[in-house]
Image 1 (cartoon, rainbow, N blue to C red):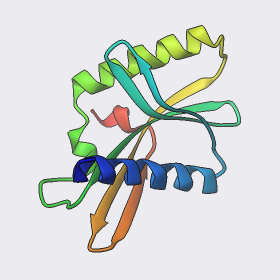
Image 2: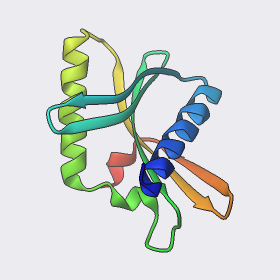
Image 3: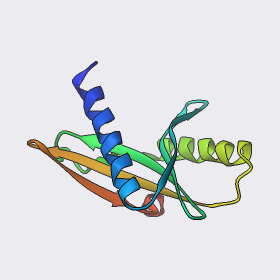
Length: 119
């Protein structure tokens, strides 16, 4: 497996562990619909949190969350619309980004709630 793929998998696992510690239940990982993939779907009470995980080995080229573009946002919205419909859910939906940056042998995690409000 390529090194960047390993880093991405590590970042997703760190994000899952982070969310569980904050009281979320992980409902789905790597949910796919058409061309979209949702990294994590987590639930806390009546809130369904759609989480895009961005992991980088450095912040030199910018913050990881800066790499979520309008096309990706549109794909995520389409995918989660399908997910909610297919599972007949009545929940509030929020789109989050978890940015993971590796610095030497340590990782920093930033959870940006309602991340797409800022795009």
